[in-house]
Image (cartoon, rainbow, N blue to C red):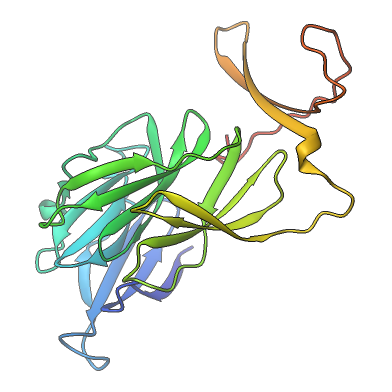
Length: 250
């Protein structure tokens, strides 16, 4: 069973088709700038069992999110020239090489930045890469930090390529689902929308992340939320415990 999708890169230059299954993917692209809408689709990388990849674009380069045929099980972000898109020409981005402890789930290319979404230590993360002139290296890198922990950050709807602002979704155990604009240069946030929750005052609550050690030595994360005025540190208190983990969510 294969899924077929058709999309345009945020830069507006390329139409990309993706034909994928659980274990394979294959993409083709049309250069609207050079060939126009009547041009032919060009193969990026032929299908190989175990190889998953997806492509985005900025400048003279394609950026490929891939598992490299399971050589990078947690996925990595690579770069190649748009004229040489096959796998033999994929290279690591200098300053953002593969890290087996970092799981990459998405990448968004802007004119001067690449925003990379993923997980590390079980938590959702957002890394901002300021690219150098060649587009093959990182001139600066930072992780977007949020005030509450634990929390969840996700990709929002972004329509503009020539911008320093990325829109993301955000929520935590005490903050309702929110839409936030993040300035990738100034490192500032502007909340655009918060989901209304009737009769709720978030200032009354706090959250924490604890780690418990299982019998086999594995560390198990535990997120706790409580009323500040009802909690006394060190005192035994009632607890409602809920556990869930499936489909790579944990």
